[in-house]
Image (cartoon, rainbow, N blue to C red; front, top):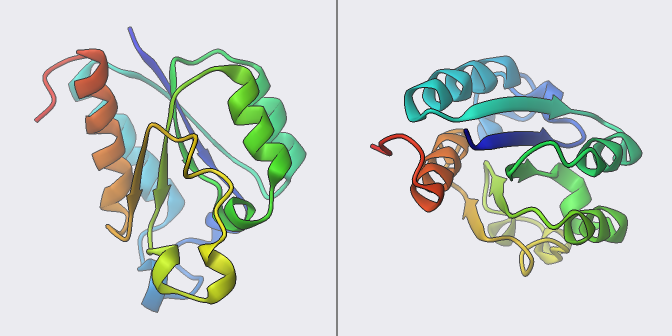
Length: 147
């Protein structure tokens, strides 16, 4: 069974209340529950992890107990060479997800340390981007029947 790790970075624990005009009203717990349901349908094993601390995210990635990852690094996307190095170092493919499209926002968000090492990027699709990433992984790995 393909194991998928969903990593959410700083401030994503505030989804549903933080800037709903940008990120919507869906909470991280609701996103994770939808992913668990979809993963079960696809025959994927799923683990979710969120932290506001860069080192905790890196430590979690270093466990390498997964086959693919879905990463929404939040603001660390634009600042963290260390997170990039961890993702390269663990040798696991990942899909980069962003609820909004950082390229359409402030200038500083156009810096992205992860885009060129991600297998795929899903940006600006709202919270549906997470399920789209899961479906993409299922299709790439031949798991279940991606619908």
